[in-house]
Figure 1 (cartoon, helix red, strand yellow):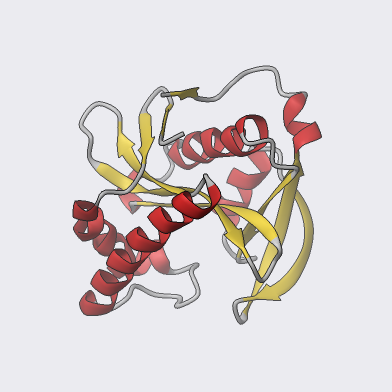
Figure 2 (cartoon, rainbow, N blue to C red):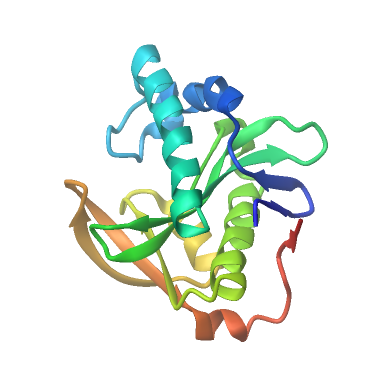
Amino acid sequence: MSMLETDRLRLRRFETDDWQALARLYADDTVMRHMQSGRGLSRADAESRARGNITNFNDHWRRRGFGVWAVTDRKSGRLLGQCGLRHVEEARDVEILYLLNKTMWGKGLATEAAGAALDFGLKTLGLDRIIGLVRPENAASRRVLEKLGLRFERIAPIWQMECCWYAVGRAAAASEPEERAQTA
């Protein structure tokens, strides 16, 4: 499934030309404050990371049949961020992840995008379990995971930082009455 749509968003595979918009996110101190670096990357590092991530995201799609989408505004097509699923070798699990432009925060878009990705993983792919990894101080991201039905499991290190580990299984998703996204 290469694209998902929600009421306001289109989640599509990344295109090579998306690197500049993605690099702006990676360079933003506010957007990146809860990531491993704790701050935005330098312009050169952000550009390199954006290009590398697009390659890695698309390679993950080819190898595993799922991955990280570019989150775009459904009306304008503007790139708003990234969201999707990736296999985390260190955790031996599939993680749901999301990162949006700070101008989009507080509008429910992270929940909307991540909800569509979660449905895709649990209902379409039939994954047994999906985790969410978030720094303890990132209250907004923790609320997103909780709204989506992920349950707190523990605080434990990964990638040389402490993270809250959340998880949800397919059985919990099957009891949910409505679909959050239509597949395209």
